[in-house]
Length: 420
Ligand SMILES: Cc1ncc(COP(=O)(O)O)c(C=O)c1O
Image (tube, rainbow, N blue to C red; front, side):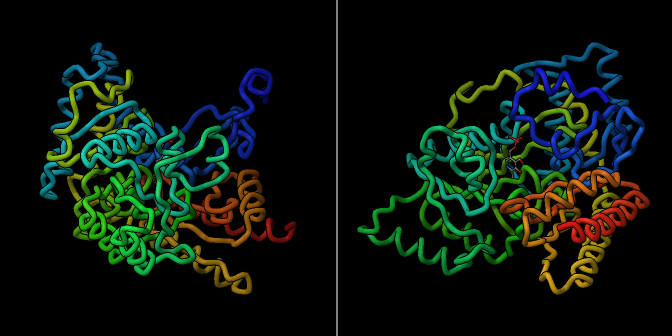
Protein backbone atom coordinates (compact mmCIF):
# COMPACT_ATOMS: atom_id res chain seq x y z
CA UNK A 1 0.00 0.00 0.00
CA UNK A 2 1.40 3.36 -0.99
CA UNK A 3 1.64 5.65 2.02
CA UNK A 4 4.47 7.73 0.60
CA UNK A 5 2.36 10.79 -0.36
CA UNK A 6 1.28 11.11 3.27
CA UNK A 7 4.76 10.53 4.62
CA UNK A 8 6.31 12.95 2.16
CA UNK A 9 3.71 15.69 2.14
CA UNK A 10 1.52 15.52 5.20
CA UNK A 11 2.40 17.21 8.48
CA UNK A 12 4.09 15.46 11.37
CA UNK A 13 0.89 16.16 13.30
CA UNK A 14 -0.57 12.98 11.77
CA UNK A 15 -2.00 10.94 14.62
CA UNK A 16 -4.52 8.15 14.12
CA UNK A 17 -2.87 6.98 10.88
CA UNK A 18 0.13 5.95 12.97
CA UNK A 19 -2.07 3.70 15.09
CA UNK A 20 -3.96 2.39 12.05
CA UNK A 21 -1.18 2.13 9.45
CA UNK A 22 -3.17 1.36 6.33
CA UNK A 23 -5.04 3.20 3.58
CA UNK A 24 -8.79 2.90 4.00
CA UNK A 25 -10.88 2.82 0.89
CA UNK A 26 -14.53 2.06 1.61
CA UNK A 27 -16.76 1.91 4.66
CA UNK A 28 -20.21 0.65 5.51
CA UNK A 29 -21.96 0.82 8.89
CA UNK A 30 -19.45 -0.57 11.42
CA UNK A 31 -16.81 -1.70 8.95
CA UNK A 32 -14.01 -0.04 7.06
CA UNK A 33 -12.13 -1.78 4.28
CA UNK A 34 -8.61 -0.84 3.25
CA UNK A 35 -7.32 -0.87 -0.29
CA UNK A 36 -5.82 -4.32 0.19
CA UNK A 37 -9.34 -5.57 0.91
CA UNK A 38 -8.89 -6.12 4.66
CA UNK A 39 -12.07 -5.44 6.60
CA UNK A 40 -11.90 -3.78 10.02
CA UNK A 41 -14.66 -3.60 12.60
CA UNK A 42 -14.89 -0.02 13.74
CA UNK A 43 -15.27 0.40 17.51
CA UNK A 44 -14.03 3.98 17.29
CA UNK A 45 -16.56 5.43 14.85
CA UNK A 46 -14.63 8.57 13.98
CA UNK A 47 -14.09 9.43 17.65
CA UNK A 48 -17.81 9.34 18.30
CA UNK A 49 -19.01 11.02 15.11
CA UNK A 50 -20.47 8.03 13.26
CA UNK A 51 -23.29 7.13 15.63
CA UNK A 52 -25.40 6.02 12.68
CA UNK A 53 -22.61 4.15 10.92
CA UNK A 54 -20.41 4.78 7.92
CA UNK A 55 -22.37 5.66 4.78
CA UNK A 56 -25.73 5.32 6.45
CA UNK A 57 -28.02 4.22 3.65
CA UNK A 58 -30.98 6.48 4.51
CA UNK A 59 -28.79 9.53 4.86
CA UNK A 60 -26.82 8.73 1.74
CA UNK A 61 -30.01 8.55 -0.31
CA UNK A 62 -31.28 11.83 1.13
CA UNK A 63 -27.96 13.54 0.46
CA UNK A 64 -27.75 12.22 -3.12
CA UNK A 65 -31.28 13.48 -3.79
CA UNK A 66 -30.33 16.86 -2.30
CA UNK A 67 -27.25 17.08 -4.56
CA UNK A 68 -29.20 15.92 -7.62
CA UNK A 69 -31.74 18.69 -7.17
CA UNK A 70 -29.01 21.32 -6.64
CA UNK A 71 -29.89 21.98 -2.98
CA UNK A 72 -27.87 24.79 -1.39
CA UNK A 73 -24.79 23.04 -0.01
CA UNK A 74 -23.16 26.10 1.53
CA UNK A 75 -25.30 28.82 2.97
CA UNK A 76 -23.43 30.79 5.69
CA UNK A 77 -26.42 31.53 7.94
CA UNK A 78 -28.91 32.43 5.26
CA UNK A 79 -32.25 30.65 5.46
CA UNK A 80 -32.46 27.46 3.40
CA UNK A 81 -35.06 24.76 3.05
CA UNK A 82 -32.66 22.08 4.36
CA UNK A 83 -31.86 24.13 7.44
CA UNK A 84 -35.55 24.83 8.04
CA UNK A 85 -36.23 21.11 7.91
CA UNK A 86 -33.39 20.36 10.37
CA UNK A 87 -34.34 23.14 12.82
CA UNK A 88 -38.04 22.22 12.72
CA UNK A 89 -37.39 18.52 13.19
CA UNK A 90 -34.88 19.11 16.01
CA UNK A 91 -37.42 21.30 17.81
CA UNK A 92 -40.21 18.79 17.28
CA UNK A 93 -38.30 15.59 18.07
CA UNK A 94 -35.75 16.69 20.68
CA UNK A 95 -36.63 20.02 22.31
CA UNK A 96 -40.41 20.15 22.58
CA UNK A 97 -40.92 16.68 24.10
CA UNK A 98 -38.43 17.70 26.82
CA UNK A 99 -40.07 21.06 27.43
CA UNK A 100 -36.87 22.82 26.31
CA UNK A 101 -37.18 26.24 24.70
CA UNK A 102 -33.47 26.67 23.97
CA UNK A 103 -32.40 28.54 20.84
CA UNK A 104 -30.22 26.73 18.32
CA UNK A 105 -26.98 28.50 17.51
CA UNK A 106 -24.81 27.30 14.61
CA UNK A 107 -21.13 28.09 14.33
CA UNK A 108 -18.06 26.70 12.55
CA UNK A 109 -18.85 22.99 12.39
CA UNK A 110 -16.54 21.58 15.06
CA UNK A 111 -16.92 20.83 18.73
CA UNK A 112 -14.24 23.25 19.78
CA UNK A 113 -16.11 26.04 17.98
CA UNK A 114 -19.28 25.20 19.87
CA UNK A 115 -17.35 25.34 23.14
CA UNK A 116 -15.77 28.69 22.22
CA UNK A 117 -19.20 30.13 21.46
CA UNK A 118 -20.60 28.89 24.76
CA UNK A 119 -17.71 30.46 26.68
CA UNK A 120 -18.17 33.80 24.96
CA UNK A 121 -21.87 33.79 25.71
CA UNK A 122 -21.40 32.83 29.36
CA UNK A 123 -18.83 35.59 29.79
CA UNK A 124 -21.08 38.09 28.05
CA UNK A 125 -24.11 37.17 30.16
CA UNK A 126 -22.30 37.30 33.49
CA UNK A 127 -19.61 39.90 32.78
CA UNK A 128 -17.13 37.51 34.41
CA UNK A 129 -13.93 35.96 33.07
CA UNK A 130 -13.20 32.62 34.66
CA UNK A 131 -14.93 29.39 33.78
CA UNK A 132 -14.80 26.28 35.94
CA UNK A 133 -13.47 23.21 34.16
CA UNK A 134 -12.86 19.77 35.61
CA UNK A 135 -9.81 17.55 35.77
CA UNK A 136 -9.62 15.11 32.85
CA UNK A 137 -12.11 17.25 30.91
CA UNK A 138 -11.77 17.48 27.14
CA UNK A 139 -13.39 20.34 25.26
CA UNK A 140 -11.31 20.99 22.14
CA UNK A 141 -8.14 22.47 20.75
CA UNK A 142 -8.74 26.19 20.15
CA UNK A 143 -7.34 28.37 22.91
CA UNK A 144 -10.51 29.01 24.90
CA UNK A 145 -11.59 25.36 24.77
CA UNK A 146 -8.02 24.19 25.29
CA UNK A 147 -7.84 26.24 28.46
CA UNK A 148 -10.68 24.03 29.74
CA UNK A 149 -9.14 20.82 28.39
CA UNK A 150 -7.10 19.26 31.16
CA UNK A 151 -4.73 16.92 29.31
CA UNK A 152 -1.20 18.37 29.42
CA UNK A 153 -0.24 16.65 26.17
CA UNK A 154 -2.64 18.98 24.36
CA UNK A 155 -2.20 22.02 26.60
CA UNK A 156 1.55 21.99 26.04
CA UNK A 157 1.05 22.80 22.35
CA UNK A 158 -0.73 26.07 23.10
CA UNK A 159 2.45 28.15 23.20
CA UNK A 160 0.75 30.76 25.37
CA UNK A 161 -0.60 30.65 28.91
CA UNK A 162 -4.06 29.12 29.07
CA UNK A 163 -5.96 31.46 31.29
CA UNK A 164 -9.33 32.27 32.80
CA UNK A 165 -10.13 28.78 34.06
CA UNK A 166 -10.64 27.56 37.63
CA UNK A 167 -9.95 23.82 37.78
CA UNK A 168 -11.87 21.50 40.07
CA UNK A 169 -11.51 17.73 40.36
CA UNK A 170 -14.10 15.75 38.41
CA UNK A 171 -16.32 13.63 40.63
CA UNK A 172 -14.31 10.46 40.06
CA UNK A 173 -10.86 12.07 40.24
CA UNK A 174 -8.76 12.13 43.41
CA UNK A 175 -10.18 14.75 45.76
CA UNK A 176 -13.38 14.93 43.71
CA UNK A 177 -16.96 14.61 44.86
CA UNK A 178 -19.41 16.90 46.58
CA UNK A 179 -16.78 17.93 49.18
CA UNK A 180 -14.63 19.56 46.49
CA UNK A 181 -17.65 21.52 45.27
CA UNK A 182 -18.42 22.57 48.84
CA UNK A 183 -14.84 23.72 49.34
CA UNK A 184 -14.99 25.81 46.16
CA UNK A 185 -18.32 27.28 47.29
CA UNK A 186 -16.81 28.19 50.65
CA UNK A 187 -13.85 29.82 48.94
CA UNK A 188 -16.13 31.91 46.73
CA UNK A 189 -18.00 33.05 49.84
CA UNK A 190 -14.72 34.04 51.51
CA UNK A 191 -13.86 37.55 50.34
CA UNK A 192 -10.18 36.86 50.95
CA UNK A 193 -9.85 33.56 49.08
CA UNK A 194 -8.50 35.34 46.04
CA UNK A 195 -11.15 33.73 43.85
CA UNK A 196 -13.65 35.65 41.77
CA UNK A 197 -17.04 34.15 40.95
CA UNK A 198 -16.98 32.23 37.67
CA UNK A 199 -18.98 32.86 34.50
CA UNK A 200 -19.84 29.19 34.04
CA UNK A 201 -19.25 25.58 34.94
CA UNK A 202 -18.52 23.39 31.91
CA UNK A 203 -18.99 19.68 32.48
CA UNK A 204 -19.19 16.42 30.55
CA UNK A 205 -21.75 13.98 31.92
CA UNK A 206 -19.42 11.19 30.83
CA UNK A 207 -15.84 12.23 30.25
CA UNK A 208 -15.03 10.44 27.02
CA UNK A 209 -11.47 11.41 26.15
CA UNK A 210 -10.87 11.75 29.89
CA UNK A 211 -11.17 7.97 30.29
CA UNK A 212 -14.89 7.10 30.30
CA UNK A 213 -15.49 8.68 33.69
CA UNK A 214 -19.20 8.70 34.52
CA UNK A 215 -20.59 11.47 36.72
CA UNK A 216 -23.45 10.63 39.07
CA UNK A 217 -26.79 12.39 38.85
CA UNK A 218 -26.33 13.68 42.40
CA UNK A 219 -22.96 15.24 41.64
CA UNK A 220 -24.24 16.85 38.42
CA UNK A 221 -27.12 18.34 40.38
CA UNK A 222 -24.64 19.67 42.92
CA UNK A 223 -22.61 21.32 40.14
CA UNK A 224 -25.78 22.80 38.67
CA UNK A 225 -26.92 24.07 42.06
CA UNK A 226 -23.54 25.61 42.77
CA UNK A 227 -23.60 27.33 39.39
CA UNK A 228 -27.04 28.74 40.08
CA UNK A 229 -26.14 29.85 43.60
CA UNK A 230 -23.08 31.77 42.47
CA UNK A 231 -24.79 33.30 39.42
CA UNK A 232 -22.85 31.24 36.87
CA UNK A 233 -24.14 29.37 33.83
CA UNK A 234 -24.33 25.57 33.82
CA UNK A 235 -22.96 24.26 30.51
CA UNK A 236 -23.11 20.61 29.52
CA UNK A 237 -20.67 19.57 26.82
CA UNK A 238 -22.59 16.74 25.12
CA UNK A 239 -20.40 16.72 22.03
CA UNK A 240 -19.27 13.12 22.42
CA UNK A 241 -21.80 11.60 24.82
CA UNK A 242 -24.88 13.11 23.16
CA UNK A 243 -26.85 12.23 20.00
CA UNK A 244 -28.01 8.85 21.30
CA UNK A 245 -24.69 7.43 22.45
CA UNK A 246 -25.87 6.62 25.97
CA UNK A 247 -29.31 5.28 25.05
CA UNK A 248 -31.20 8.58 24.99
CA UNK A 249 -30.73 11.70 22.89
CA UNK A 250 -28.86 13.65 25.55
CA UNK A 251 -26.53 11.98 28.03
CA UNK A 252 -28.35 13.86 30.80
CA UNK A 253 -31.88 12.82 29.83
CA UNK A 254 -34.03 11.71 32.74
CA UNK A 255 -31.81 13.36 35.36
CA UNK A 256 -33.95 16.46 35.80
CA UNK A 257 -31.04 18.75 34.91
CA UNK A 258 -31.65 22.15 33.37
CA UNK A 259 -28.50 23.29 31.53
CA UNK A 260 -28.19 26.91 30.41
CA UNK A 261 -26.20 25.84 27.36
CA UNK A 262 -25.70 22.45 25.74
CA UNK A 263 -22.86 22.08 23.24
CA UNK A 264 -23.36 19.56 20.42
CA UNK A 265 -21.25 18.52 17.42
CA UNK A 266 -19.81 15.17 16.24
CA UNK A 267 -22.92 12.97 15.70
CA UNK A 268 -25.35 15.77 15.02
CA UNK A 269 -24.45 15.99 11.31
CA UNK A 270 -25.50 12.35 11.07
CA UNK A 271 -23.34 11.13 8.23
CA UNK A 272 -19.98 12.25 9.54
CA UNK A 273 -20.52 15.52 7.72
CA UNK A 274 -19.55 18.44 9.95
CA UNK A 275 -22.05 20.37 12.03
CA UNK A 276 -21.99 21.98 15.47
CA UNK A 277 -24.82 23.56 17.39
CA UNK A 278 -25.33 25.07 20.80
CA UNK A 279 -28.60 25.10 22.65
CA UNK A 280 -28.82 28.39 24.52
CA UNK A 281 -31.56 29.32 26.94
CA UNK A 282 -33.44 32.25 25.34
CA UNK A 283 -32.69 34.64 28.21
CA UNK A 284 -28.97 34.11 27.56
CA UNK A 285 -29.20 33.89 23.80
CA UNK A 286 -30.70 37.37 23.62
CA UNK A 287 -27.31 38.76 24.69
CA UNK A 288 -25.85 37.96 21.27
CA UNK A 289 -25.78 40.69 18.63
CA UNK A 290 -26.40 39.51 15.06
CA UNK A 291 -23.31 37.99 13.46
CA UNK A 292 -21.15 38.41 16.54
CA UNK A 293 -19.83 34.84 16.53
CA UNK A 294 -19.62 33.78 12.92
CA UNK A 295 -18.03 30.82 11.12
CA UNK A 296 -17.95 30.65 7.32
CA UNK A 297 -18.92 27.00 7.40
CA UNK A 298 -21.91 27.24 9.73
CA UNK A 299 -24.43 26.55 6.99
CA UNK A 300 -23.74 22.93 6.01
CA UNK A 301 -26.49 21.84 3.61
CA UNK A 302 -25.40 18.19 3.48
CA UNK A 303 -25.18 18.00 7.27
CA UNK A 304 -28.64 19.53 7.66
CA UNK A 305 -30.04 16.90 5.29
CA UNK A 306 -28.24 13.97 6.92
CA UNK A 307 -28.79 15.39 10.42
CA UNK A 308 -32.54 15.74 9.79
CA UNK A 309 -32.57 12.12 8.63
CA UNK A 310 -30.63 11.07 11.75
CA UNK A 311 -33.41 12.55 13.88
CA UNK A 312 -35.75 9.88 12.46
CA UNK A 313 -33.95 7.43 14.77
CA UNK A 314 -35.43 9.34 17.71
CA UNK A 315 -39.08 9.37 16.67
CA UNK A 316 -39.54 6.00 18.38
CA UNK A 317 -37.56 3.91 20.87
CA UNK A 318 -36.26 1.22 18.50
CA UNK A 319 -32.66 2.38 18.22
CA UNK A 320 -32.38 3.66 21.78
CA UNK A 321 -33.71 0.35 23.16
CA UNK A 322 -31.11 -1.44 21.06
CA UNK A 323 -28.37 0.87 22.36
CA UNK A 324 -29.30 -0.12 25.92
CA UNK A 325 -29.21 -3.83 25.05
CA UNK A 326 -25.94 -3.61 23.10
CA UNK A 327 -24.43 -1.41 25.81
CA UNK A 328 -25.19 -4.17 28.29
CA UNK A 329 -23.62 -6.77 25.97
CA UNK A 330 -20.46 -4.64 25.76
CA UNK A 331 -20.38 -4.03 29.49
CA UNK A 332 -20.85 -7.70 30.39
CA UNK A 333 -18.10 -8.78 28.04
CA UNK A 334 -15.68 -6.15 29.37
CA UNK A 335 -16.56 -7.15 32.92
CA UNK A 336 -15.93 -10.80 32.13
CA UNK A 337 -12.52 -9.82 30.67
CA UNK A 338 -11.77 -7.81 33.83
CA UNK A 339 -12.89 -10.75 35.99
CA UNK A 340 -10.71 -13.19 34.05
CA UNK A 341 -7.70 -10.94 34.71
CA UNK A 342 -8.81 -9.88 38.20
CA UNK A 343 -5.23 -9.74 39.48
CA UNK A 344 -4.74 -6.50 37.44
CA UNK A 345 -7.67 -4.68 39.08
CA UNK A 346 -9.11 -3.42 35.77
CA UNK A 347 -12.29 -1.37 36.03
CA UNK A 348 -15.19 -1.29 33.58
CA UNK A 349 -17.10 1.98 33.22
CA UNK A 350 -19.60 3.56 30.91
CA UNK A 351 -23.21 4.03 29.93
CA UNK A 352 -25.09 2.83 26.85
CA UNK A 353 -22.74 2.27 23.95
CA UNK A 354 -19.85 4.18 25.46
CA UNK A 355 -18.06 1.59 27.54
CA UNK A 356 -14.46 1.47 28.65
CA UNK A 357 -12.03 -0.78 30.45
CA UNK A 358 -9.38 0.92 32.55
CA UNK A 359 -6.19 -1.13 32.17
CA UNK A 360 -4.22 1.07 34.56
CA UNK A 361 -1.39 0.96 32.04
CA UNK A 362 -1.03 3.33 29.09
CA UNK A 363 1.63 1.20 27.39
CA UNK A 364 -0.68 -1.81 27.51
CA UNK A 365 -3.54 0.31 26.10
CA UNK A 366 -1.43 1.34 23.12
CA UNK A 367 -0.14 -2.19 22.62
CA UNK A 368 -3.72 -3.47 22.64
CA UNK A 369 -4.74 -0.86 20.07
CA UNK A 370 -1.91 -2.06 17.84
CA UNK A 371 -2.63 -5.78 18.20
CA UNK A 372 -6.37 -5.20 17.73
CA UNK A 373 -5.68 -3.29 14.52
CA UNK A 374 -3.68 -6.21 13.15
CA UNK A 375 -6.55 -8.50 14.12
CA UNK A 376 -9.07 -6.32 12.28
CA UNK A 377 -10.52 -4.10 15.03
CA UNK A 378 -10.27 -0.32 15.38
CA UNK A 379 -10.25 0.95 18.98
CA UNK A 380 -9.02 4.09 20.66
CA UNK A 381 -7.23 4.44 23.98
CA UNK A 382 -8.16 7.43 26.14
CA UNK A 383 -7.62 8.60 29.71
CA UNK A 384 -4.26 9.47 31.26
CA UNK A 385 -1.51 8.07 29.03
CA UNK A 386 -4.05 6.01 27.06
CA UNK A 387 -4.73 3.56 29.87
CA UNK A 388 -8.46 3.23 29.16
CA UNK A 389 -9.80 1.42 26.10
CA UNK A 390 -13.01 3.12 25.07
CA UNK A 391 -15.52 1.27 22.90
CA UNK A 392 -17.82 3.53 20.88
CA UNK A 393 -19.03 1.51 17.89
CA UNK A 394 -21.77 2.91 15.65
CA UNK A 395 -25.11 2.61 17.43
CA UNK A 396 -26.38 0.86 14.31
CA UNK A 397 -23.71 -1.88 14.38
CA UNK A 398 -25.02 -5.32 13.32
CA UNK A 399 -25.13 -7.72 16.27
CA UNK A 400 -22.69 -10.15 14.62
CA UNK A 401 -20.11 -7.39 14.18
CA UNK A 402 -20.53 -6.34 17.79
CA UNK A 403 -19.83 -9.88 19.03
CA UNK A 404 -17.00 -10.42 16.56
CA UNK A 405 -15.40 -7.13 17.60
CA UNK A 406 -15.62 -8.10 21.27
CA UNK A 407 -14.08 -11.49 20.45
CA UNK A 408 -11.19 -9.77 18.67
CA UNK A 409 -10.76 -7.42 21.61
CA UNK A 410 -10.52 -10.28 24.08
CA UNK A 411 -8.10 -12.24 21.92
CA UNK A 412 -5.97 -9.15 21.26
CA UNK A 413 -5.77 -8.30 24.93
CA UNK A 414 -4.44 -11.79 25.69
CA UNK A 415 -1.75 -11.29 23.01
CA UNK A 416 -0.92 -7.80 24.22
CA UNK A 417 -0.53 -9.05 27.79
CA UNK A 418 1.80 -11.85 26.70
CA UNK A 419 4.16 -9.42 25.03
CA UNK A 420 3.78 -6.62 27.59
C1 LIG B 1 -16.60 16.35 24.95
C2 LIG B 1 -15.90 16.97 23.78
N1 LIG B 1 -15.95 18.29 23.62
C3 LIG B 1 -15.35 18.90 22.58
C4 LIG B 1 -14.64 18.17 21.65
C5 LIG B 1 -13.98 18.87 20.50
O1 LIG B 1 -14.60 18.57 19.30
P1 LIG B 1 -13.84 18.83 17.91
O2 LIG B 1 -12.71 17.84 17.84
O3 LIG B 1 -14.89 18.58 16.86
O4 LIG B 1 -13.37 20.23 17.94
C6 LIG B 1 -14.56 16.78 21.78
C7 LIG B 1 -13.79 15.97 20.82
O5 LIG B 1 -13.41 14.84 21.05
C8 LIG B 1 -15.19 16.16 22.89
O6 LIG B 1 -15.14 14.83 23.07
